[in-house]
Length: 140
Image 1 (cartoon, rainbow, N blue to C red):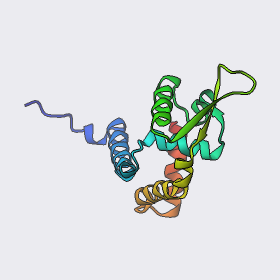
Image 2 (cartoon, rainbow, N blue to C red):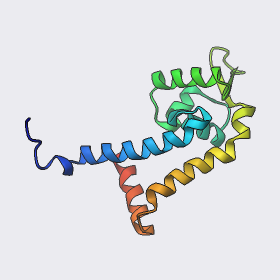
Image 3 (tube, rainbow, N blue to C red):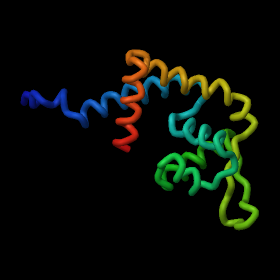
Image 4 (cartoon, one colour):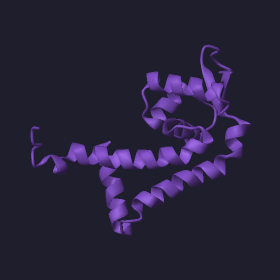
């Protein structure tokens, strides 16, 4: 078997990928009992921030491509997490709202996200937390 380059474990792409896998996997497990994916949860939190957005507005806010978001919105509508209503000014566009089902679990779902974040950040000091967040924002 061919030996991996010795610098691979220190490769930034590798490290970021592994960090993403760990964070994404933990949060995915927290959301499993609700039947939500990470992206669906993100959409709900975006809508709780500003309910009634269009798909384009959600896409811009959450930095998601429209093709991905389209499928997510369709599944969330089918499973009762959101509702869609024609935009009053343009019937071709729909405004998206959280459902009663989603709103009844809002506090619980936000707490799941906060707990997942805290678990990730628990090993860092306050200054390290802020530095990490700032560095990640700069990468984005």
